[in-house]
Image (cartoon, rainbow, N blue to C red; front, top):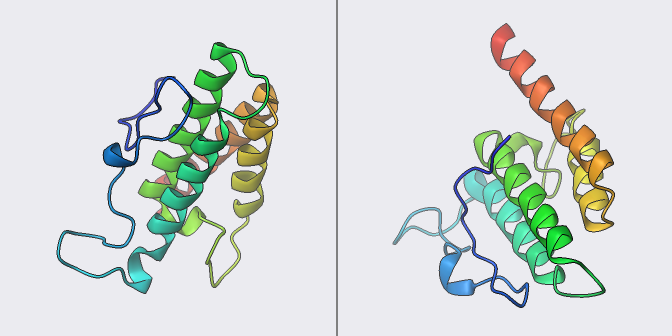
Length: 132
């Protein structure tokens, strides 16, 4: 399972490279953010906050890479399916708990648990898409 294209870069210190991240206030250049792209913006903000925390606390380089991988993979799933972003959602979705669980598990270096959450999200979304 590989990482999708990155919307952010992490410097050697574990900090997010702001120049590599897209503008958070606009969905497209010259257009203001709207309620329609709010879930994507929330996902980007969360991913940037998550990546900025990677340099804190004792972490091995392997842990930092693994945490970043989970953040980026989950961000890609949410980008493809914005209704999965729990923050700012007007309607609860059954997978919101799994998104939150994946983020928290990865942040706490519980990588097997984070992998299980991410797998469940992907299988569920895949099943939903096939049924439609």
